[in-house]
Length: 177
Image (cartoon, rainbow, N blue to C red; front, top):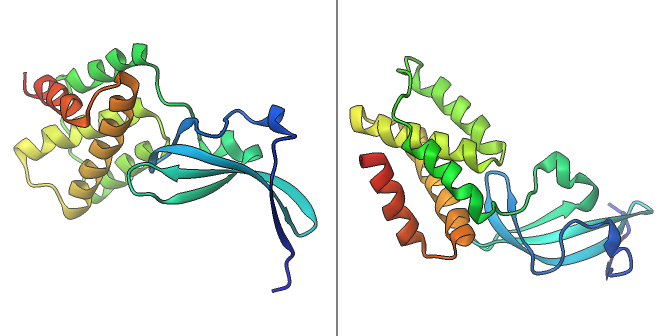
């Protein structure tokens, strides 16, 4: 492979970026990360700009082409004012009975998590949390519940500027009331 790869930090074209270095952003299904750099790389003779983002939860580093921000679903952390809407979703008790098989439910929930919407993630968490009260979750569903919980706690704690423990106790009181 003789592809020419050249790396240089680029601050000249910063007007095309929606995020800046040190901004927090949410990458669908991975959670909140910090933009560590904006770089221009020459790949196959074409210059492309990338966000270099480190996911807070697990230190994974993701390179996101700046022109693909919208298509990959990279977005800002929700505003504090939107937290009440997430809590309203978590507090909904009128959930229609789910007669799907566990693998169909798993696929549906995974699609919702992949959207990157915290509102969808909240619905998945609520449904699985309440479902586990009435039946045993499959291994895949337990993993999805953990993923949804991690995504919710991290973003809500950042939005509200408090600890994940405080958020979890607020969520549990919503779900158990």
